[in-house]
Length: 228
Image (tube, rainbow, N blue to C red; front, side):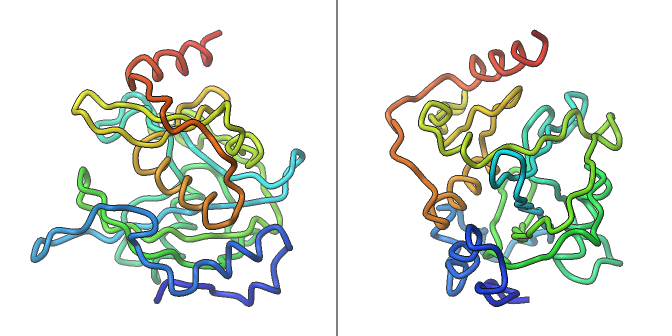
């Protein structure tokens, strides 16, 4: 499946139509500077960028991975994961993973666009972000606490608030975007993809990119908020 709209942008709510239209002819460079290594194998994966019209306006579904996992413990992510042989493309992968991780009912979700495949060096995954509209929201939960610690619908208004945007510095020296969400610190691949989504949709507000914080300290602050 090629990147771009899967539906007519005029056939989705007005607040989403511009974002769907913006996925046409979109190049991966608009979302990441990381390029896949030539000649090396990658593993297909997909994530579900699920947007709904919530109590506080449009929101997005995020999960926090269990602290006991070997891969990316405690990180905030979009529901998603590696493709199974039985999956019929990235949309099927994203919907299956969202059901397994957060209890999302696939029959209430409408895939509206595919973003370009993005390479994740740490895992070797080639990830297809699936943009979807939550037409009939279902209750969500951490289905398996051994894999998912928390699930939350985070309002877009919260994410674009300049007070909740900054950058974090990893011990390796990497510096990237971050978002403070209730009880969560969004950073890494997910924060980069989320920042790109807000920019494409025209929702981004001016924020202080010079505000760079230590990653470990920011994670401790988010965990303290959960425990309070």
